[in-house]
Image 1 (tube, rainbow, N blue to C red):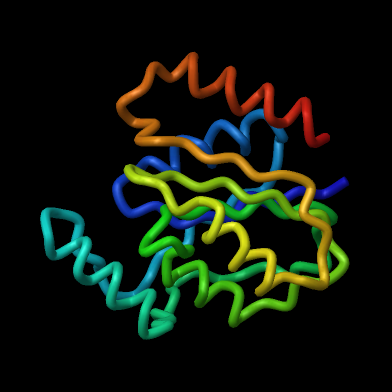
Image 2 (cartoon, rainbow, N blue to C red):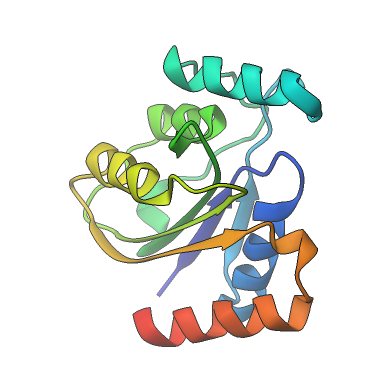
Length: 159
C-alpha cells in the first residue's frame, strides 16, 4: 500500500503532525509551498487568511506534484482558516485528480471550525472514502510525546 501525506503549514503546527504521520506510516510526504509568502503574524494573518478562503483563492504552488495514481491512501493536512482548509490545499485539489482513494484528514487550529473544514474537504473529494479525521489545537504548544501518542492512537483506529 502506497501512502502520501500532503499538507500545508503556515506556522509549523500542521507540519508537526505531518512529520509524525510520515515517520509512522513510512510514507511519501509533500509540504505545499505557495509561490508568494503568506503573512504569519498578527491581524494581517487572520485578515489575509479569511479573505483568501472567502474569495476561494488558489495560490500558485512551487511544488512538483506526484501522480496520485501511485497512491492508495492519502492523508491531507491543513490549518483551519475561516472554518475551511487553507488556500494552498485548494490549489493542490485543483491541480490533481484524486478518485477512488482512501483519505484521512488532519487539521490544526486555535479556535475550532474543524467539522465544517472536514465537510468541505469531503465535498471536494466526494469520489473517495474518508477513513478518518483528527484535529489538534496548537500542537507546537504541547509535549511532542503527547502529540505523537495521539497520532499513533488515531492511526491504530483507522488503519
